[in-house]
Image (tube, rainbow, N blue to C red; front, side, top):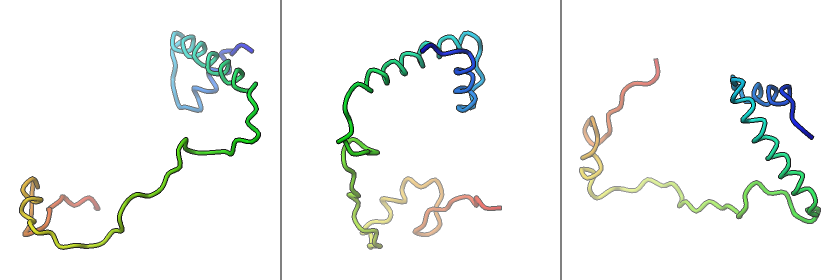
Amino acid sequence: MSLTDKDVNHVARLARLALTDEEREKYRGQLARILDYIRHLEKYDTKDVPPTSHVVPLSNVWREDEARPWADPESILANAPEREGNFFKVKKVIE
């Protein structure tokens, strides 16, 4: 199956891309190779492979978020562009 200009334009529109004629030709070839590879993969039996969103299982490795006193707040605040007491001072972001 060869891709047409209409196919490439459709994909470009979905991706919100404005393509030149040169880019359209370049991407037509790239998309064709991607689709050929997918057709190549279709010959493998995957009915017993469960759907996954990640190749390896993910789990949250973070500790519980708890407030703890810090022994030396000066070491943290030393790099602050602005500070007010023992706090970082930041510009107002809400109008």
